[in-house]
Amino acid sequence: LEVGGNKITVYGTVRLDAIVSDARLNHNQYSMWALSHDPSVTPAIDEDDGFIDINPRLTRLGVKVTRDSLPGWEGAQLLGLVEFDFQNRATNEIEGLESESRELPRLRHAYARLTRGGFSALAGQTSDLVSPLWPSVNGDGLMWNSGNLGDRRPQLRFGWEEPISDGATLTAAVAFARTGAIDRKNLDAAAGDTMKDGDDSGLPMIQGRVGLASLFEKTLDIGAWGHVGWEELQAPVAGEEEFMTSSVGIDIKLRLLDTLTIAAEAWSGRNLGDLRGGIGQGVNTTTGEEIAAAGGWAELAWQAAVPLTIGLGVAVDDVKDDDLTAATSRSRNLALYAWNRVDLGGGFALALEYIRWETDYLGVDEGRANRFNLVVTFSF
Ligand SMILES: [Ca+2]
Ligand SMILES: [Ca+2]
Ligand SMILES: [Ca+2]
Ligand SMILES: [Ca+2]
Image (cartoon, protein in one colour):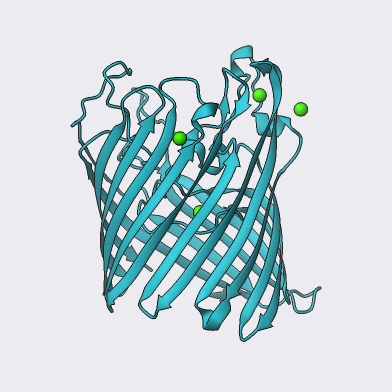
């Protein structure tokens, strides 16, 4: 569709996820860790307490608008994008549970991006600049808090791309983003404060990444990145009124053969709940220390035939035990996964995913879960 120099594209995916698990996870849909089987933990959960979940929440609809030129700025191009799905966990039932038949929209992306030559500027909400890759399984939980960092948040981003040789490109970008957009941390809520601690700091989170793209005849992409952010409290927690969040990491995507690809990320940081690390644990409120963690994930995807892709992966989020004090703290989260996907053409595809979570706790029994997910999608 073309209107007044704007090219408008509507795109989306109709999707059903059918999930079964042989043990409880933190959540049926955005699964990230296995719950402890320890009888002392409330609520006590049987080791073999499985569940089923059938949902269309990752059905997605987007609109993309592009302009090849701007009247007042020669050579500049503009892209605008708005994308929704239906994974909104707001409760709209009197019992306080989310409705599984009146699903509410969730804003995923909403941004404008200006590019001119190698320069680009982005304003709006989109993926984090750090940890830009994600695993092929768990479209909802994205293996977050199991080794994969990086969600979506409001930000202002500036980037530069410079061709270096044979189609390879050097990229550099910096983003000023919202701290607390994910974990909504408000550690002084008990003292009556109503402002999230990231907002209270008065400072944006700063994210940066440098990368080399399309190296060695477009077989290798690599990047190094990091972030830093601040949190401020009005009432001290364990004597502390200020916290920091920070990380450093790398991402790699390597095409070994035309049909064989490796993707991986590795990272280390502190107070990572807002970036989906530290198994969802940011600050120890007993000691007032930021909780350190390190982890990553790696997967191998093989296109066995034109319509069939098979993959294997491993992911880990290892929290520094010395930074934990509560027996129910999550100390290490390991996941092993496999999937296959059949592309039936015309945008119709079927996938079957298997993920095994092994979640260890500081002082209570571990959690173990085997989760299967059938995914049916029609993308357009
Ligand atoms: Ca990532
Ligand atoms: Ca606060
Ligand atoms: Ca303040
Ligand atoms: Ca650990």
